[in-house]
Image (cartoon, rainbow, N blue to C red; front, top):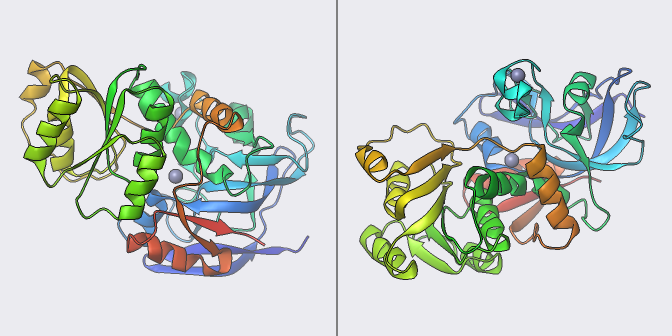
Length: 357
Ligand SMILES: [Zn+2]
Ligand SMILES: [Zn+2]
């Protein structure tokens, strides 16, 4: 094995390059994965477009949605993990093991969590190390990829697991419910898909009228039954009233981060409805919240996934019930990954896959 690898590095704010960097060293407790495929996430784009700096500072290797093969394992690594295993990492590389999040098994909410591509080196590189410390604390921070799931599909298990957690674990969706999903990005589309898989009576997608036609076609393919428009709020409220038998929806999944859309979604719920907010956007929310109190609405924060979200998402993929790849619109090579980010920034791309060869 050579000493260096190609990696897409955030060198400083606004400067990104594919560079030669050292291949991570593998200690007795660590695993080394050779990447076979990756996908670009909206949160990676936040760093690329300067909206956010990596929490660990610069330079850092970008990216977290991944699939690859174990090529090295330290001598103390559990026999569960063998060289040649096809795996995907859920992208946590460090947690403290003792905070409230960690002791209750919700390690993605660990105050000290370091995630790939944001607080530690990521996966837009030929190799990535999974440190022994995280394997000891969270043995299931990597998952075997089922045989029927391709390397191209496997990186998409990560955003799909987010959708799973939002809809079923946080949103507590029941079959037969009316669900609203705002936003047609990856998290919006996977949430809508999960709601459809789980037996929602209707999956209503709330988007801007300018949303690209191909995204809406994908949304329909994934199980969206109705499309309504956030820039036509009165019409959309009336449509939801009609579609839900006059009461309003049971559950809303908010992925846009736009305060006006969150507010509109809250008004589309019936009393005691639930909203899960997936979005990251710190714009202050400028509306009064009394209707939340008076109508007993639950507003629930979303963070990532837990092991149950991952396992169940993998089961759905294994059983052929999950369409992971319809949202992919573009493919780029690692050497050309900047183009993939530019396509995401310009909103030309929905989801960009990164190919390694
Ligand atoms: Zn992601
Ligand atoms: Zn912790």
